[in-house]
Amino acid sequence: MLKVGITAVQRGVARLLEQGAIGYTLVATGPLPAIRRAELTLSASGLAKERYRSRAKVEAWWGLPDAEGLRSALTEARSRALRILADHAVEAFPDGPIIDNTAFFGLTDGAPATYHEVEALDDTGTLVGEVRTVIGKHVLVAVDDGAPLLLDTRLLAGRHTVAAGDGARVGGMRTAERRRPLVYDTPTLF
Image 1: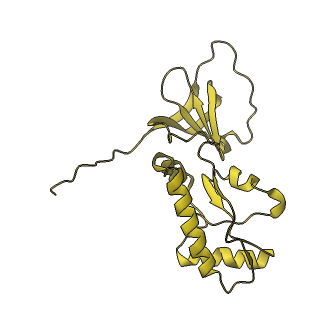
Image 2: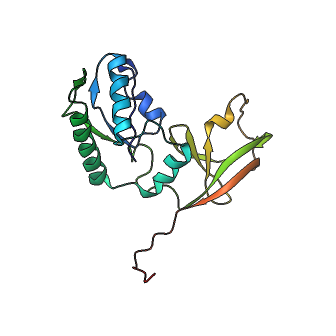
């Protein structure tokens, strides 16, 4: 899953962390119009998309490559991108660093095999647990009574949050169970 995007130099890597970029490499720099054209060109070439739905990103956490696989994929993608952008008015970074955020986001072992994704919160919803990791706008919360919860923090917009008191329990939310897809290694006959 490759995504192409732009960010202001002043923001550093903050934008990439906000988006939950598991790994990244910088391809080029330049004035905004030239970089935007480069972004559109890479997207139109099919090398990388400009956008992925949140669900697709989260589901990809179950199948993350190992460190060498990620490095190899990003190195190859950067090489292809630079060939595609050869005639663009941008300053290329052919030897820029390859950054792996897998451990930073707590995904060395991938996403939990099962979790409950919070789909909606009631006005009196209560989320009680320990934050395991924050990946972009998603928070994975370990709870006492079962599989962890995955909360898209956009659901908190406009809400007042307070610390839960002693004895508080998770409630007032609609969740959907998500399970790691089964992978069959055995060849089948049909």
